[in-house]
Figure 1: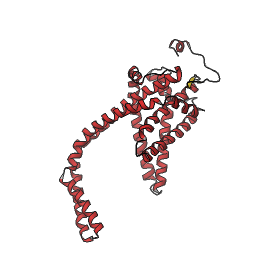
Figure 2: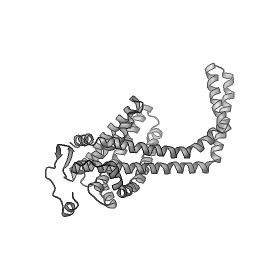
Figure 3: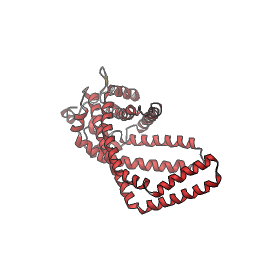
Figure 4: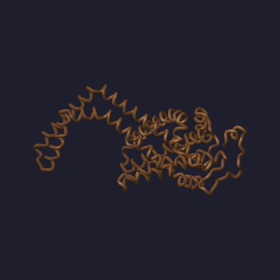
Length: 319
């Protein structure tokens, strides 16, 4: 039933997808400009060097001699490629400090990009919660401004943890699958890598699933919400993990299909929709477990079998 209710809530809040799309496009454009400002000087310094020109010339010459069937000239092109490549390595080595600072700049921009994207995600979650709890059509922009402090605290905690986790998992799985299982055929390696990656993401989502609902619907403080989401006692974690695995696998399939069959145009819808549907599941799971009633559409209210009475604090908070 959670999966069905999640889909209904997603359809009921589908307009949030377009607001997410516009917000994310603005963030992506700004981030792309900053990436270009950092990377372009390094790219120009590399591609403008004589060694790079010789390397490209050597590769073209090697391919030309190979196609034309002139094996005697291949040795000259091979030597040219080797010399140019060695010189490029020396050039890179001599500019290690600049390269390190460039990498630091790219990482910093990536963190800021994720932070501001997270602010939009928080606003979308607040809009979805208002629709589920009160049938209110809240403004995305007003939700973004109204929740700026709480969203900033949340993202200052979530974004670094998420980036560290994702980097560690991807690096670990790469060495496990492609290095440790080198004797396995490549298609099977790719299948295993994707499956384990989806499982790792599902595991992260399981542990963090109650974070946003606890902040927005539960009105807990940043610290209490953080402790609450990682306390999995009595939360049927296996069922939550299984649901996340199915949803994330479907999201992966839809995004790949959107990229391949629409030449990338479909990603304009599937990418923002991916987050919206994940938030919908998080809130459906939270409402069901906390025995709170909620709307899944204009005419349907989901009520728990035994509705939990509001506490005095919840009543005066307007819940």
